[in-house]
Amino acid sequence: MALKKLADKDELGNPVAHFFKSGNVLRGKEFDSLIKLKELIPTSSPQGCNVEYDIWYDFSEGNKIHGYCYTDTLTQFIYLRVASCKYAKKAMKEAASGPITEEGERLFKEIADNSVDKYRLRKKGIKHDFVIFLPGTNILNTVVDFDKVDRAVKQGAMLKCHPLTSPPAFEHLKHRWGNAVIDKKVSGHELLENAAIVGYCNNSEMGMVALAKGKTTYHFGYNNVWMTYTAIYKALEVDDVLREPRFKAILSSKYAGLIPATIESPQERIDSFFKQYSEVPHVLPKNTNN
Image (cartoon, rainbow, N blue to C red):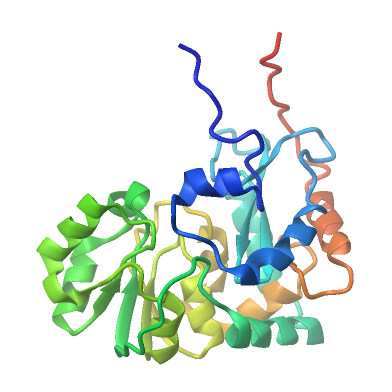
């Protein structure tokens, strides 16, 4: 039997697509402003490669580009990235070494002041000094360095489960770490706001938000596992520490692929992002309709 698509258009703002990704966990209204910004994102690159929503993949052909991806992030941004570890890392490293503009400074402050939960979660006034944000069930065992988490929990760290953590996975975490595991429906951003130390993995924006808010950050993932934000975090790190000036430089760059909804000309950033790859060989998708 042929497989059916879960949604006709897997894109930002499609309620059917979001339902199949997150079930009954609803997204926050603060992200509605990104729907208009999404309309500027093309469905294919100038060379004809697909530009796809909320996925990550990489091909082993290091000198060729097979496609592009985008996702919504940091409340008011769309993150465009090339589906190539090599080129994504190169572009972000160059952006992090670039100049810091007034716009970059402003965007950094907006992240610190305005970031909210992607999903509608409960604020309960809970405060913990050290919180580690875990990824969802589908990548939990692939991404997280559990030995490092064990050591942190012994030092008092609390664990915030991803809102989409499955019941069996949640029970497994509770069995292993007991009361150190926080209810997955509790607001992650409230926990982050009240924490002094924040643990993150490369699938999550929480490390970037924590950096903007002046928190101490620690990475609890494997360095050799490439995830959505790996290129950004690798560019931010100097001697294993996330650096504020490098984040401001990335936010200042027209080529990094971070497209804010709060700037006058987001189209300029989108065009600049694709232009930097104009000389790179592209592999077009095969036509499966024939």
